[in-house]
Length: 279
Image (cartoon, rainbow, N blue to C red; front, top):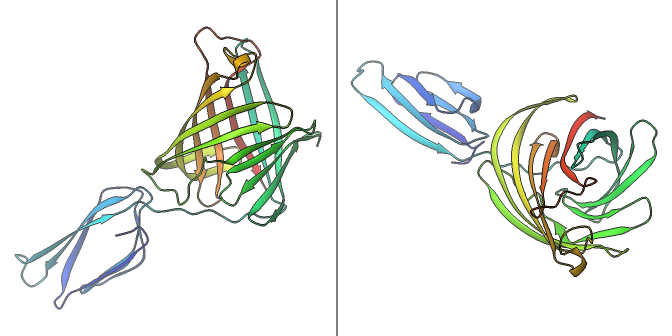
């Protein structure tokens, strides 16, 4: 059965019910428990194998056993809220060992025709930063830098394939091209690893832990090996915590790897993004 499905068992004689639930994350909502009825909605974020037994009160030798396999809860997106502001602390570590942190506020500026405009600004000075266009599943379609350079993902950067549930895997690929000349290709393998609690300065959230591996190819970044020929490659491995109640990631960790021997001191090796407030 699917998580959240309703189940009802009834008996003609009084029984004693016993349920063995494997996962401590599984709950039974809207439960009715009497000597002749066991019912409720089985909700399991991670999936579960439940054993339910009914022992007849008048004759304990008579036992009914039911094994129930519950598929993981499937989570869909949450609608954008125009005006919502999510502030993140973003930290970059580079090859030369320097660490910089900035606080950026992302505002949902508008939503129309299945797309949302997201603007970012320095959370302290309000200086404008990058803006983004995303689809309704929060996959990125384009980004615009403060210098006016517009970069597009075609057909989209597929980081989220909804619904999400524990164990789900997916792949995606895109071409990335900027008006000022930069190009590359991206290919992602994504997986929902588990459902767990994650704490950030904005609070504690129940979240799906997502793992991504993105392979970038055909980059024309001339500072990367083979970039002058438009054939540079590098890789990004990511963990992200996606909160179903918010429909967004509340924490993000990226690690970058490059060709053997590459160690340009200005290039990032790790990047983290942590939600500090949501309003």
